[in-house]
Length: 632
Image: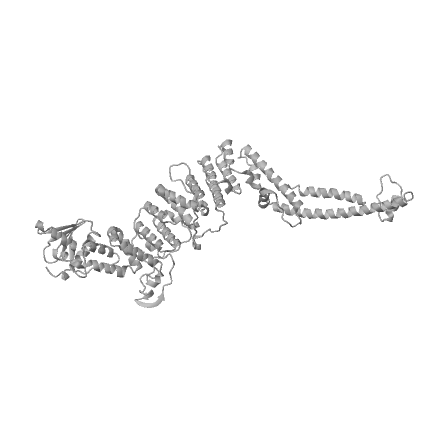
């Protein structure tokens, strides 16, 4: 047989491989139904497994030894590479085949015991020196582990790749010279841009935190899940991990496209030009991704969860996965939007919208006791204000949801009641939204009986309706008569309370500019929400006018009392000699003529007497006072 180093050609005939060595084959190796007709000496001298199998088969005295290799890692193609190495043919180790060759060398026991520089030591050295220090090569190697996952786990290849990628994600890409998409392979190992192989000295400036999202999205679900968990243990920011999970999910669940939260630019990747997309079961992807999602809050994240729930209902995922998604949404329901909650019914039910799902989410919101910490970056549009009052926000959201689904003619009254009663009555400070929703429902369901309408209207606290809502409800022909009477009763209560409050405020105010305090919360709500502030201001102006009038009347009464005293003095001294007209002329006053007075020398009055002026002023004051409160 010629020297192994001179063997340079393997040929395939049908389903068999032959080596051109000038000697007949004396060993046949079968891998996955493919036969390799080779020679014993090159294989036995390099592979401990084949050597042991040959020693065990010497008793058969067959001229041609046949070795059947079961569960061979990498299949016939990888064995061909190992066979060429045994014959001295130079092989090329690449990021794509290194894991296969590494596992093949371990399977065939090609250790240095059977020759220095054997395949196992060479592949192990290449893996540690070249693969684990390069982002692109490490991604490619990890992706190729999927087909030989068991042996790769045994050799700790998966762990080493995952740990290396986790470390590199925490580091600035330019420090390691990882090629970015904008420059491709035109980059030197030191991170500078190359032009025709010449180092230009220019540095890459792109180092956004999401540059690695697209690259790891080419991994299988199991490897991706493992990588994310390893990154989490290494302390990578949770918002970055969530961003990677969302990117991965959108890639393999195209239905999430319209529910993406926030603006997403062109994905930055370094390996997409050399990676091959994988085919994944969407249901498996969704159920696996749900377990990776953290317990965080955010508007964009909530929209993503709602979109994920829609896809889950379409794919028919397990009840455990669906319930977990509903719980996650329930914990941050105050951040949800109306369009996100409008989930269509994907079952055989007659209703257009899945109100049962929304009801379960509301119950999860009410039963949630855990405090979910918000994301810190502004890109996720967080709502972190402690004064946001989540319960009131959810109540308003539910009222709007009922108004939106109320036009569905197949929606039963019991569904409306279940949605309303899922929240406590205290969650609504104003029942205008619920009244509007029921009014839309009554309009779309004219066949409802008065009893059914009354049962639904019993959920409304009419004392918490605004003046405008009361005015609308009192003239609403779609409402039962009993409900209209209740509305009118509470409307009168509103007006009476407001009137009493305004009168109380006018009596107790120390100054015209002081605040008017109405008794009870109801009067305060009416004044603040229905334009009563303007009326109170007008009453303040009227009060000032009344004070001026009282002052003027007091002056007139004081002047009139002086006149009376003067008249008494005159009457005492000139009771029989003086007449009233003389007295009046002495004090500078003129009297009005009487109807029976027909003498030509009678003095005509030039102005009203003090008593007449006072009597005229008082009715005017009472009329203005009554007019000021006629608005009530």
